[in-house]
Image (cartoon, rainbow, N blue to C red; front, side, top):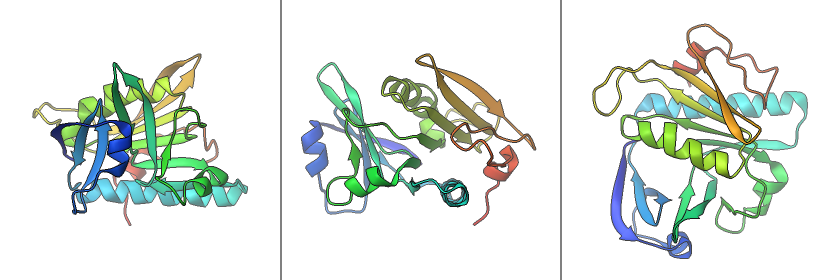
Length: 206
């Protein structure tokens, strides 16, 4: 998705209550609304494919977890006095945690257990945000596994980039990153028996 900054400083509480009578979707970045524009079709296909793959694997091994596509927010500690809240493309959480969000804003607070796994699918306008900013933020709140999917060949500045899948695993409070391409099986610690290649993810069909 292409991200557009809305120059308006909000608190976290104001963000939760914010409405502009549209169907637009926002994250909050250091107090500023970030409008998430319409994604390319392949972006959505990858999200749906991973959500479905995770749910199938959860059912197969009998875990009481759920994968949710762009439905759960994650609050990040303040930078200065400005709040941040992210909404990962795919989130895996215990079912009990998801059910606790059903009758309130679906945002995991700072004093709550972080998601088991989050996925971000990169768009041209989100290279830096997904690879650097969110990496640091998800590290800070202790998300054990962060998967970054890049199906593009150029970033937002027209620079050539390598498509692939990065799996970041939290080890001693820092992310270790492994990059996967082609027919190499992507090893996701949350689902050690799930067999998906980088190409299957990048070229996802629905």
